Length: 231
Image (cartoon, rainbow, N blue to C red; front, top):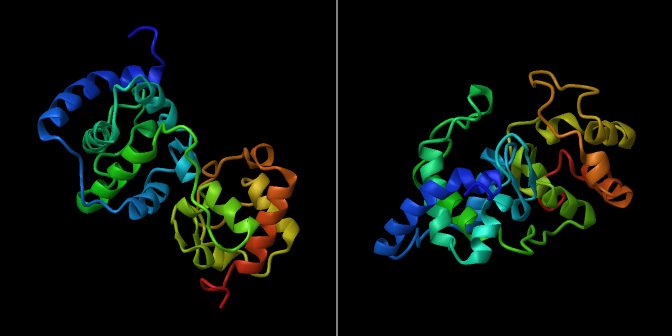
């Protein structure tokens, strides 16, 4: 175990127990809504965790793709095992290096919401080649989806309802393209009233290509304040 990556070392003891339970039970949550789970994950978990299929880039908690990829590849974990681990971690999170500010609060999702989130993570976390689904709305809408923006922001045109960051339908109309671009690449330059600094990643200037940034700014400029479908 000493040679395993840190995320795997944290999960292995719990995984062994859950694997035994799942062998007996034979399945995970069979009636979960995977698509709904993705939305709930981006809204509740994406600010802390990286997961490629969700397009999220949080760095406070473990990278879920890294945490599960090796075990999946070795055949040690299947979707039901991962699902069980997620449920256990949400119900009883591990302390974040002794720092309460980095410890996930218990029961961040519960009941059916937890079923859907756990089933979603169980299906996609650590799966090679997993990526966000294709969305309507053009290249900029795809950049918005790929980078998990809807997990933090509300934007009706993208059917996004995140509340961690400002409601883009309220704050972006009337802003210039340059102002919108600045809010993406330098999010601490201007902090929206009522929101703390240092929440939005400051890495989009590096992670987005110039063309992706241009398309995202165009999409936000043309879509903010409008309903889904451009109304």
